Amino acid sequence: MKKDFNHVESLYWVFTQLCNDDCDHCYNDSSPFGARISKEDCFAIIENMPDRVDRLILSGGEPLSELKLLYAILDKIQEKYGDETQVMLQTNGDLLSKEKLEILIEKGVRRFDIASIDRYHKKAGSRLAELAEIFETCGVNGTEKDPLIEGGHYLAENPLSWGYWGATEEMWLGGNWARGKAVKNDIYKKDPDHNFCNILSGARNFLGGYDDIPNEFSIQLWRINPCCPGTHFPMGDARKEKVVDVLERASKNLVFRMLNEGKPLEMGKHLGVSEEEAKAKNADLKNICLYCDAFMKCHKDEIFDKNGVMHTDAVQN
Image (cartoon, rainbow, N blue to C red; front, side, top):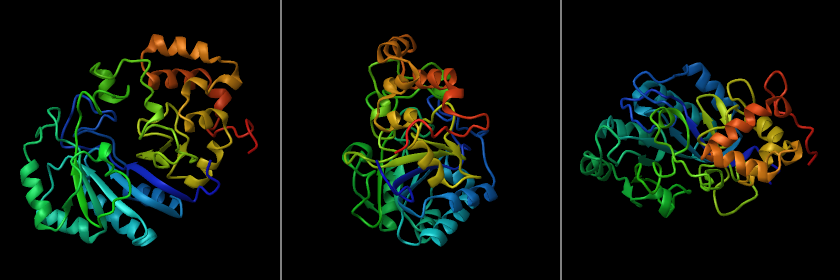
């Protein structure tokens, strides 16, 4: 496990849930009516981020739906980190133009991921050729067509690059977590043997200690989470707390240490919940995220104090 939480490899930040699209499978309820936070909140969150972040992924919602806020965030990130942080942008591409791309590059974005090349998004990938031309015109290299699988989501070797992907039966839809509209529309993955917690964007390695996937945690609007889907109760509030303090508390809590190991079925052992009991509950719920939610709700008082702060007396080191 990491000792210095002031240096993280990857931070995934959904700074808005506002979106021009309204996809049935969206895990965070993004839509034209999606949740938003203020510029002041965003600036406070940036101030509370670790001192060193190797890559910072900005996502939504659709980031370009809040263009002025996105530009302000990029300016603030540049002010805090300079060129030491690789800024990545996840977008559905619907609102992207050559003029906007030039400004985004000027403001420090170095990697662009078009996350909508599938049948579930409004444009269903119809703009891909047009987007490819826009990127080429602005000198952005098309490196990997499937960056999540081929490695484009790791620190890129190219100084300026783009890739594309989307929800497929094998990838995001096939492995969809039980969140947001995926639950409401009953299209989340129902497979108790699928341990999303143990793979990229899951909780494993959010506290460090593994070399096979990036050390990454997420912030959903302001909620500090060990994974992109997020636990039922967040670890902390990035508007009000230093992220490093929250991660240090998590490192001293056995529940979150087990999530860091990608072993959610073992996070209740010290509370008297055997792995066999956890497996049986997970089999009933048919989704590891739903099991995690049920566990957190059942044991909230043993994990958090009355103010929602994680207990740290579970382990001492």
